[in-house]
Amino acid sequence: MAALFEHGLFAHVVVLITLFLFSPGFCVSPSSTRPNILIVFADDLGYGDLSCYGHPTSESPNIDKLAAEGLLFTQFYSANSVCSPSRAALLTARLPPRTGIWPGVFVPSSTGGLPHNETTIAALLKPLGYATTIIGKWHLGVGKNQTYLPTNYGFDSYYGIPYSHDMCPCLKCFYPGDACWDKCDTGYTNCPLYRNNTLFEQPVDLTTLSKRYSIEARNFIARNAKSGTPFFLYYSTQHTHHPQFASKDFRNTTWRGTFGDSLAELDWEVGQILEELKLQNLEENTFVFFTSDNGPSLVREVRGGNAGPLKCGKGTTYEGGHRVPAFAYWPGTIRPGKTMELAGTLDLLPTIANLVDAKLPNVTLDGFDIGPLLFQRAKSPRDTFFYFYSSASPKYGLYAIRYKQYKAHYYTQGSGTSGSKNHDKDCRPTDNPTAHDLPLLFNLDEDPSESYNLSNDPKYAAILTRINNIKKEFEAGLVWAESEVHKGHSQDVEPCCKPGCTPFPTCCTCT
Ligand code: MG
Image: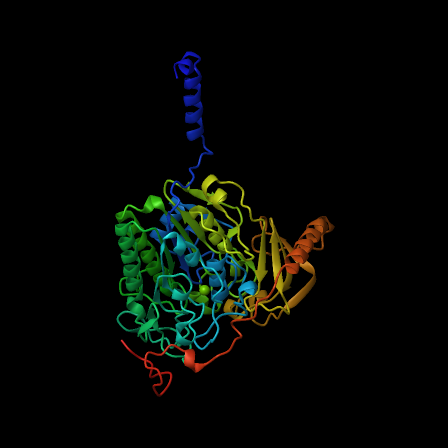
């Protein structure tokens, strides 16, 4: 040491370390190998629905805090434009054709579900000593004897409605007794609320649901903080899916009407969770990720959400169907800011696996570890994104590919969930599947609204050839698993807390 001082080397080393630590490019790496993992998954929340993404009358101070103090993504993709395939992809890092979650979504009478050999984020974390739970919407099957509920996939516990709350008669959406604006699916049993595999409330009281979800989440965090157990909380809120609902604290409280009230309650849920993390002194040891399962349900018109500058919405392979708001939040570890790098829900499992040193499942994964992007602001390892239609099928296969800033559409199709009155006829359900032998080509960096087709310009021939080759290579490695959604339907699997009662399905009630 004396020699170092003599030669002035020690001082040099100190100066160099100081310069490195305080240079603008410096970012810390996660220090703990067992951080808590918290995913907040909103439902049908579009790219343009939050004030931090430009909505002029949305109010969500707690979510805006994540945006301001976390890393906001401008090019983050959900793996599909409707619920079940999107949710399967988030949890498994696999595109829906590989897991069999096609075409479309499960309904209460569906006999299929997520195949049991699929590895979810929960199943990955559980062997490492994590406490794992899901609160909210599951939408990957219920099945006979609850064989497809979350506790069969690495989750220690479950509290929630196992599918969308419009897949049952809509009775009461607002305190003290305002009717829902939609009747929803009256042919199915009343909305069920489960704790683990037990159905204990039917129909669910939506006006108190958010409060109960939040209490469950806070108790889970507090319990694990007390025992020093790392946890995975998958908070899969029912908001802002239609029909919007809210408790008395949020009813008629916002500028934006019904959707605004639902968003305000979602924002409150996020605030409750963040408050508990802070109270338990866990903020600096918890990786929080907030995003949405798909774009806005434009068919609901003024109550249907907003895709901002993006084309179409839920159900389509245009940007409005797939590109969603997203933030990563980890005070002290993720530097606040904004990134335009490509990433998506498929990337969460590989990123979390690397973060906690978990072994990746030995199957084809469609995601990348985006840790270097999150923690060092490195380039994203993702430069492609593959779009499958909401009702995907091997007959049509891949609809579109994004490569860097370019997106080529091989098929385009509108969707019922993007609205028959949509001002853009490409989004409407009457727009049948259309093959484009010369794919439509858009530069999304310059034209995020997909308005100006470039494929007739010879200048882009090389890009089209490159994307065509990516398509060939991808399709050669794609094996379509048998459809779980087509497996069948049976009244026997519909949740009913009075099995065998009559008249079915209205007799299925319990409180
Ligand atoms: Mg959804």
